[in-house]
Image (cartoon, rainbow, N blue to C red):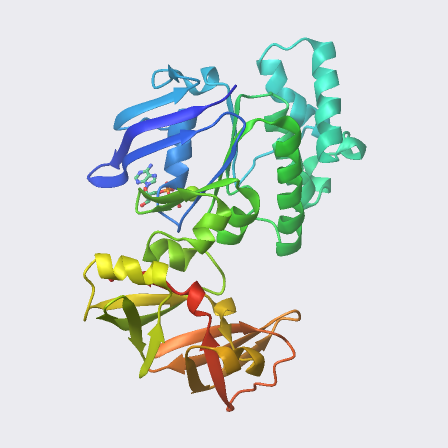
Amino acid sequence: MGAIQLKNVTKKFGDQMVIDDLNLSIEDGSFTVLVGPSGCGKSTTLRMITGLDEPTSGDIYIDGKKINDLTPGKRDIAMVFQNYALYPTMTVRENIEFGLENKKVPKEERKKRVQEICEVVGLTQYLDRKPATLSGGQRQRVALARAMVKQPKVFLMDEPLSNLDAKLRGQMRVEISKLHQRLETTIIYVTHDQTEAMTLGTRIVVMKDGVIQQVDTPQNLYEKPQNLFVAGFMGSPQMNFLDAVVRINGTAVTLEVAGQSIPLPPAKAKKLIDGGYNGKTVVMGIRPEDVYDSEMFIETAKCVFSSTIKVYELLGAEVFLYFDLGEFPMTARVDPRSNARPGDTVRFAFDVEKIHVFDKE
Ligand code: ADP
Ligand code: MG
């Protein structure tokens, strides 16, 4: 069991409001990722859950029981940090077992649990080594194993992979996912990296300046971002944003962008009609993969632009084309077979079904 609830939690450091009335329910056994830019209050939130920091106001519950007044040791929560400190003079086995000695677990039981957990994280052949002889990824696994062996109700991870190189980070991501499937423990994972959030979380909490922006599945965050911040934060390369003027004519709605009129599909049009947006400037968003340069798509497209390619980036399986529409910089993610090169004037089309519209405020 390990359901967590934060109710009206605020945290101030001096006059600085770091967490502003945070409300969040986390289901037992779920994998939740807190994501947001550096300084938005992710670590502070975790530290309040573990008990390393105290909320200025509000309450925190585990399985319905208020834990505000419990010391960290009594909360049955394990935490893994970015800078995991292993004891250099102890072997891998001793490092992992150490936490259990504190918990007064009998010797035989300790041995069994260490053995089990090392099989899970693939450390069996390193049990007698000292940390200095391990790679970064192996050390990180020891840190994970040391936290897991305590069999906590809740597992908190604060950017545990950010000191690893990209390839290892990818591997460890997969391992952490597998671990979660196997242990079914509640995990709250903090990262500033939206790719990590998208690939790990079954539920993602996007934060900015101590305020939750959206709580959703990775797919919904990507396809239905609720505001400009979420739209810009999730996805790489970032969603393209252009100022657009709304023109409403009966039930037909168009967006005027860079000298073109883009007809909106009915569902999107309705929101603008209901909101009384005629003549107003909004922000139109379109993801790079929804901008096309292929003639096949352009033939049937509802709006076509011309622009000159400024930069061409080949990433193997895909190509990013950078160009401007009016004053707005744009990125298109296209097929690597595209012939477009810097200096070429190319026709582009948007998939109008995939257009997002945001209020400027
Ligand atoms: P994140 O983990 O999202 O990068 P943090 O939770 O570490 O952000 O920090 C949120 C804000 O709180 C930052 O502006 C940071 O400077 C401030 N902060 C964090 N801890 C302290 C502290 N002990 N004293 C004063 N300010 C702090
Ligand atoms: Mg942090």
